Amino acid sequence: MNELPETDYLRVPSDRIGALIGTKGETKHLIENATNTHLDIDSDDCTVAIYPGENMEDPLGVWKANHIVKAIARGFNPHVALKLNKDDTYLEIIKLPLYVGKSKKAMARYKGRIIGKDGKTREIIVDMAEVDMAIYGKTVSLIGELDNVMVAKEAVEMILNGSRHKSVYAFLENKKNERKMKEFKEVVGIEKDEIEFRDDLDD
Image (cartoon, rainbow, N blue to C red):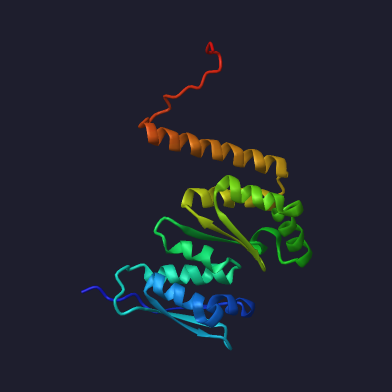
C-alpha cells in the first residue's frame, strides 16, 4: 500500500503572504484544488504547512504545491506559479549572493543589469528562452520547460559573471534557433543533421 506523501513545511517572506492567500483566500483555494492538497498558512509566523488531500491521485501533489508556494514567495504572480502543476514545468531559483557576494550595492547593480534599461534585457531573456521570470529580494527565479529554464539560467549567469549584453543576446538567439530547428526536425521526422539550407537556388 502506498503511503501518502508527507507534510511539507516552508517559510514565506511576510510581504508575500497576502499574495499567497489572495482575496478572500482565492489563491490558497486555487493551489489546493489544483494539487489536491491542504495549505495551513500562519500569517504571524510566515510559515506554510502543506498536507496531502484525502483523495490525492498525483503522488507529486505535495511537491508541486511546495514549488507553487515557493514561486509565489519568490515574486511570481499566482497564475504564473500555477503553471508548476504541469509535469513538464520547472522552477529554478538563482541565489544572487552566490555570484555577487552580499553587498547590497553589488546586488542592486546586477539586478539592474538583468532587468536592463526599461526592462529590455529581462524581456529579451523571457521572450527568447520562452520562460517566466521574477526578480525578488536576493533571487532571480525562472519558470518553464526544463531546457528553456536552463537556457535562461545560463543567460542570467553570463550577466552575473560580467558578460556584455550583446554576447548574452547572441547566445539566446543561437539557442532559440537551435530549439526551432529541433522542433522542425521533430515535426518532419528527421533525426540526424540532414538538413542544409541553401540560398543559391534559382527563383
